[in-house]
Length: 110
Length: 116
Image 1 (cartoon, rainbow over the protein chains, first blue to last red):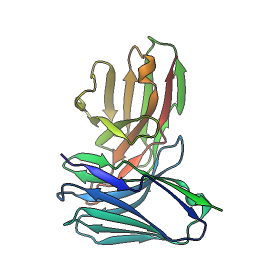
Image 2 (cartoon, one colour):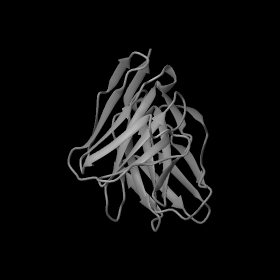
Image 3 (cartoon, rainbow over the protein chains, first blue to last red):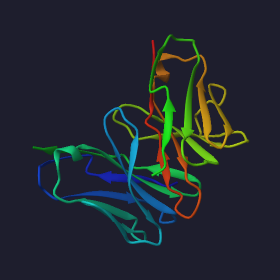
Image 4 (tube, helix red, strand yellow):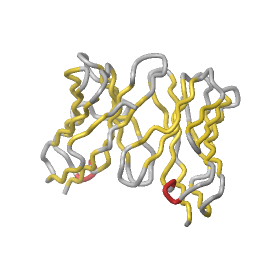
């Protein structure tokens, strides 16, 4: 069974810092990997989608990489802002099921 | 991106009553929708996969007679929590998959259910 883990569970950084969130999965047989953002009490907002054949995707200050063979993905956030504070979830699509990571709670301190 | 809506956004009900939550894909057709439950400070747990025109597939441990799912059209799936109890209080989120090469999944804003 696919297991998705995210490290760290929580992270606090001062505004302006660059940061990296990590996601690992146990089975490399995935179709794609998605990074989401979740604000407290809200649903999920899709940030980036990486197909299994791709190595990275970029959107604005966000860059996500995928190393399928090692079962790892990273989400890089450049020049962090207080508005980036949220929980970040990664999820892999394997078979017909989405497997979610445990999430990283990010706080960007002004 | 594609938009998924949920209604209601929050509901408070008495123990023993039934609650229906609607999930709609607003600008695309979704042959498959998913229902998740999220407890505080935990990740999303898949409850069931809903396919238009057929019976839902439930995950292990999810009671199909308690959580009734109806996927009547390509844009609407409903989750009915029957005879709700306080332990059913949770955040329920639906998602719809955009069929095609990307298989990107879009999530609704969630419904907060509180059972008194």
